[in-house]
Length: 177
Ligand code: NI
View 1: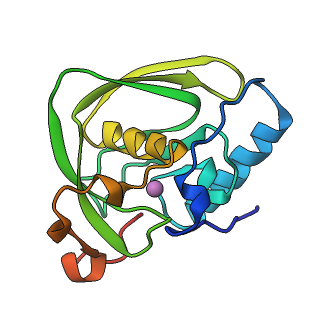
View 2 (view 1 turned 45 degrees about the vertical axis):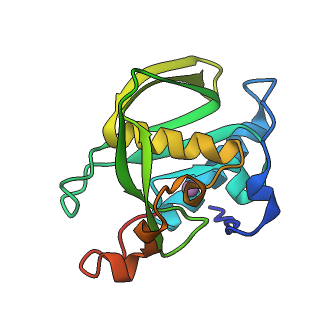
């Protein structure tokens, strides 16, 4: 069990474009992914990208289990995605509140494509190809942004909709990042 330090906004590594992974499978990928899950679960995150723990490679993880405490949070399959690509399906966008383990305690209202197709590889080298909508699509777009050096506050259109979770949502403080 290795919970790694999560870099926080202001660290220049979070603004870099991460490198593609050329050889899959590889033992270093398995080790990285284990550390990423340990870290995400310890901090109650919905997703994590390798650069958030200082590894500038195109690897992201995400997953949200059905939780009776948050009946509105749709479950998202637990997934490791290497060298991901996203294609929006249609022009629809929707706004949703996001948080990030690299921006602790904050929430912002971010527009994202409502429906996407995403592809990538799993750590065994099998192709993943899925269509997703809503919260699932949002989580994938947020994580893939990380490997391109984009943090969600950079996508907020109206900065009045950015603030501390404890002030914005006094009843739900302590929700996941
Ligand atoms: Ni994030």
